[in-house]
Length: 135
Ligand code: GTP
Ligand code: MG
Image (cartoon, rainbow, N blue to C red; front, top):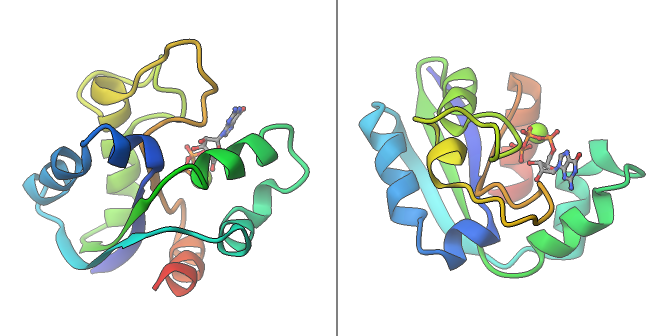
C-alpha cells in the first residue's frame, strides 16, 4: 500500500465541498489515515511549492493558498498516488474530464487556473516530502 498527500484547497473549503471530496476518496476505497484543518504559513507553502518558485503563477498561487483554511489529508491505498491524480482530473477545471473532482465541481468564472479545489502528490518522492511538510 501507498500514501499520498491530498489538500482541499481554500476554494474547496470555502464552497463547502470538503465532505463531497472525502466521499469520493472513501468511495474509491482509499483510507483516511490522518486529517486536519490548517491555516498554512507562507513558509510552509514556499516549501510545498518549491518546484514552482520563479514561475509566473507562483505568487498568485501562494496568495490563493493563503486566502483561507486548507484541509490536509493523509490518504492510503493501493496505487493511491496515481489513483488520486486520476480522481482529481487535470489541472485546469475547464477542461478536466467529467467524473473527476475538478471536472464535476471545479468552476471557471474567468478566474486564474490555480483555483482547482484539490492537490495530490505526483510521485512517491513528492508524497514523502509533502507528507513530512504537512504532518
Ligand atoms: P497540484 O495537485 O495542486 O500540484 O496540481 P497539479 O499537479 O495538477 O499542477 P502543478 O503541480 O503543475 O501546479 C500546482 C498548482 O499551481 C496547480 O494546481 C494550480 O493551482 C497552479 N498552476 C499550475 N499551472 C498554472 C498556470 O499555468 N497558471 C496558473 N494561474 N496556475 C497554475
Ligand atoms: Mg503538482
